[in-house]
Length: 470
Image 1: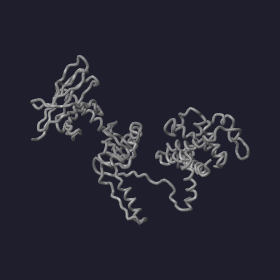
Image 2: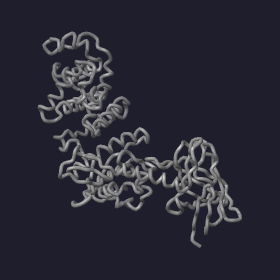
Image 3: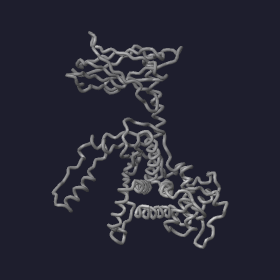
């Protein structure tokens, strides 16, 4: 006999606090000991579970399971019985559940929680109200996002899927005209294993070769989970513009999820699907190597230097912290945030110097590097980094003073305003002036000259400090 299910409520509207009585008519379903129902808040952007209720169950003579629940904790609004689950405990262990889903295995069943004196509605009227709300939500979700502001005549419509690795979510999240959806399959370690096998085969005599994990979707989703940001309607001048726009919005969502989930994930691919005309395009986002492309002795690969660094980082917790902060700055993808992170390395290292003793703010000729007012208004962190650069003989005194102030000014703009371009809103005039000077230098050079100088100084400082252990 084919399985069938009907879920019935004793009414379609409840006053807050009333008990809802549920009858589950099961045809062709064996008798089970336990009945569980899941109630969702619906007619909203993100339907969510409001109640999970499990009880011992037994059928009446007419083959109906009966249960009930209080609506005291339910906010006003519309609800749906989303899941009905049966299972039986046999031999002390729970047997496999049998699930029935609303809309798939049984007719969708709604009810409404209403305030006092509200008129009761029929089951049909509640269903119509929920349908109207859901249609309105879907219409709003499909409204276009414009990647290039007001669209040109040549602008096209796209659907965009942005794939994210290393982020596990257990539900769908709908945001403003896009949503995040968990993927059933994660990224396997096939490429990593292939690299291991190639090394073992070509450079060792072990004869080892390991199977790829591409046939283990469950394990891959646990080890390297994937979720997808879906943008149903994007208007853009090109597929590349659509990709960049959606990637930026996804990255913002990932930063937000990082606060909630403890892991923010990284984009690894984007699929752009034109509504008509051009073929879909897969954009892969690989983390490319950003270090020295030269190798060997001419590129600074010296075993004795590596050994020196290794011994110091292995035995000195401070050196390990410095190196780890530097690694975080290197791996940062946003160039604006790099100002903040590289400066953090210099600031932490410079803290070991303590406060200044005596007048150290002079150049090689013995002349002051700044007037008394500027020295007074300059923060202690800038002074410490300046002294650190002088101690390690990085550039002239004048250049070290100017650089420390420029780096700190851009770091402060990022730290307080999120971007360097907002430096004009900083409180201190001297910091605004240094930030303006730094950004003019970048513009004149045509590349982030000041950031490159900050990175180079950080490398020099760490190499000196870690090699000496001081």
